[in-house]
Length: 292
Length: 344
Image (cartoon, rainbow over all chains, first blue to last red):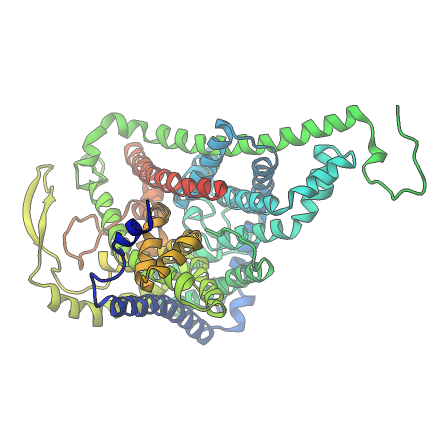
């Protein structure tokens, strides 16, 4: 091909469409409007939660039980915290083990591919189905809704989140660290426990926090499992109080005072979740954590 | 032979534990534990399927394929009829509406973040959009049911009604007695209620927007600088270059859309709080409906006789399979992107 042939090629971008600069500007404006709309929705949703939540907030909300007068949700707040704690105890170790396997041991064969697919599918399973599974596994044999069954359902959700976060964080540890450790005579396990995990500690912690933030707001998997409780009962073998279940119950009622409580509860819940998420974002800024 | 330890050398943290059998044991135990975690996770997914198929076995035997051609959902003992059709329709319509509105919005936002916004703005905007993903679904539900639904009923839907009242939709099947009839239906019909397919679609739009935006953003960032510079060098405008980027990243963007769709299919709480919870099939945007996850949330605990409970499990199985197919397609598309990135 000589220079004349190149000149003979028509330019694919110019010429045909004289208005293309205006189209370009128009699309730019459209994309900006899309962003503005998305942010406006976020602003409106948060503004309503903030204004209504603070408007109806009372000290009794944090100190009293649902059936006391004045009403509160002390037990639900504590219940959600414990439930999420139990779920973390069940789900975090399994998730971390999965992440360690995928980052440190997995080869390129079919098993790695299968494990990756299974974790992706588990992450994509509708959470209400995980509630159904926990119901069948725990509630049916024991003939009673319980905190354990709710924690199990939440743990199912946490496993793939923690697994993926751990895997990504472990992969961020530079490979020369592993080589240097091996060069000093360390075994694979020593390298893992004394070099890689300490280096990835902050990242894995934030991954766990993301998982916690995610399950703290879950309602659907608790409907058939934790069930809710109006008493200050924190025994996991009994029906368990939860903030999200209480919001659901009160939002369905015609009683204005209960609806007001639901708004306050949503504000408390969203504040907890967003603080966790924002903390994670600021800790690992610049590094990639896949929250979704 | 062991090397003599030189006290002047720096301390080596690993050399003290040179008991080889023990070290190898720990090594193997660690690997086995990690593998055990993976196997346990695989078992969980197997258990999900076993439980769902076991629970729905009775309904699979007794109802079989009629489940997909029956609209009625009538759990009264003796006269009971179970059909998933209206719930499939509800899930389908709300998901379709959410994608119809959400996909252009999300892609526009992702283009803004990656190709328009200056760097000081892109980070915060990205962060704020991801905050949308962190808000729990019950919070969206409460907002939807007490703020969005009344607003729809009083402001948006009357305007939409005037605008769309002459539009007849493609014939929609209706199954009053198990028989299939077709008739043209109005896109908007009946009074605005605020608790309808439109509300369900809108709340899902908000919920899938951050997912599609975040993944599309990541995918668009992979567009090679060389192509971009080449296009500009040939005199392409910003939009012509962006179209090249969209075409280059189309598989990943489609994967992002499928992932958003999977989220919309599985979403429960926010939708049941705004969709009206009736088992009707209507072409009207203003008609109430029900989704598969919604009927599970509302009725699973009330299923007090065996075939009713089994039918609930059948719904759960259909929901699982819909979500599975969507997720598999999404992951296949997105992992291809990952592989290409690793090769590059």
